[in-house]
Image (cartoon, rainbow, N blue to C red; front, side, top):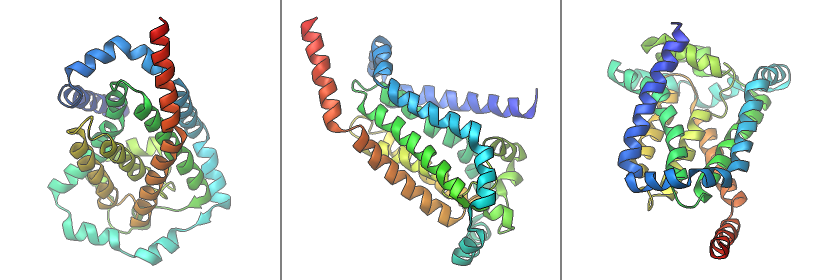
Length: 279
């Protein structure tokens, strides 16, 4: 078994187990039963948003290396400016707080916690009777990736670990984690931090759905905050990248709520109710 298959297998095992536990505790048996009876129609309602997200992810996977070349040739080279603004902040975090236990925690949450954080909301929101939240989440994810990819093309910058500011603690804890992240990312893709933007996006949706899932809100906020801190603690992103990621997240959530508006949802509910009466 190759190292990649081993890491992906471990990731699938831990994330899958976490989703099963969260489904039982956070979603609850009654919503799971309702999902089983109505999953096809809910997926159909969100088919456009799923298609949009898949299109963005495919474009990112296919065009990432080419856009990286464009960025290297024509992009704004901001590594020096970022370092001039914030200096050794990341190195200070490591020198002040780094311990073997924290390194193990933040490395694990950066990989396993992040994967769980992004995956579980799909199941949680498709389990809700109305698909508005699911559709908004899908649009927000698509916006994060699309805008992030555009900014990666415009901005050519390297993270602290590439500038010998601090230490790459992720590599120190588990070199295979670093190899895994390098398979899905480019070294110069640092501004904004998509780990930050997507984590904050999930936390924002968790806060907005706290009435439906009160237990999910503190869990999502905790993991999201841990991921954001981990990006700097592990020497992967600058504070500037994190701030950019937070702004991207809030903008994406706002736009997703405008794109999938209350009026559209109300029209869909009225149409569905009418169809049920006609039937």
